Image 1 (cartoon, rainbow, N blue to C red):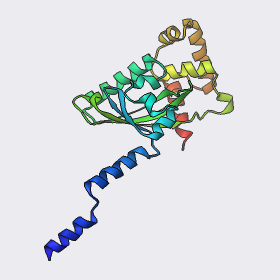
Image 2 (spheres, rainbow, N blue to C red; image 1 turned 180 degrees about the vertical axis):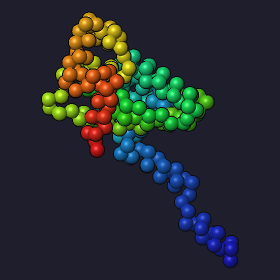
Image 3 (cartoon, helix red, strand yellow; image 1 turned 180 degrees about the horizontal axis):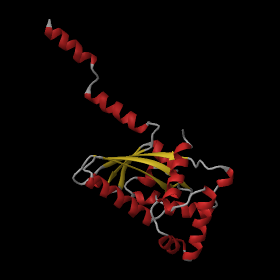
Image 4 (cartoon, rainbow, N blue to C red; image 1 turned 90 degrees about the vertical axis):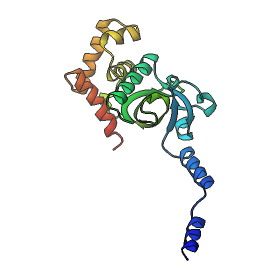
Length: 206
C-alpha cells in the first residue's frame, strides 16, 4: 500500500526536465528586468532587461555592463561601492539607486537589487534586477539637461571639482548650477539634495 502511494506521488510531481523548463520560462518571460553577470560581464539576461535598455540579446551577451552605464566613472564607482559593501557586511545582497543609460542615450533613474552566488568572490557570479523609476518633480522643479547631468553626478557621489572636470566646465560654473539646483528643490545641503532626488524618484512610483 505504501509503495502505491509513493508511486502516485512521484507520478504527480513534475519531472526534473519539466522543472528546468519552468525555471527557464520564469526567467525568460518575467516582467522584471534581470541580468546575470560574471566578473561584471553580461552572460545571460531576459527579454525585459533587453527592452529596458533598448538592446537586443546579441548586442549585450558577453559584453561588459559598462555598456549601459552613463560613463566609465559611474561604472567604476558603483562597482567599488557594491564590492566594498558585499565584502564588508559579508552579505549576499546589495541594492542601490543610480542612473543608467538607454541605447538611445537617455539617462534614467533605477533602483537595483543584486545577489551574489559566490560570496567569497562577489563579482564572480551575480544576479541583478533593475527597476526603472520616473522623475517625480513638479513642473516648477523640472530640471534642465545640464542640471540633470550635474544631479546625476552629485547623487553618484562626485564632488564639484570632479564634475567640472568630467563635464569640461569651470569649478565656479558647477557651483552655480549646484546652488540653483538647491534653491529650485528647496534644500540647503548636498546630502539634502541627494535625498530629495532619491525620495522624489521613489515616490513617483508609489
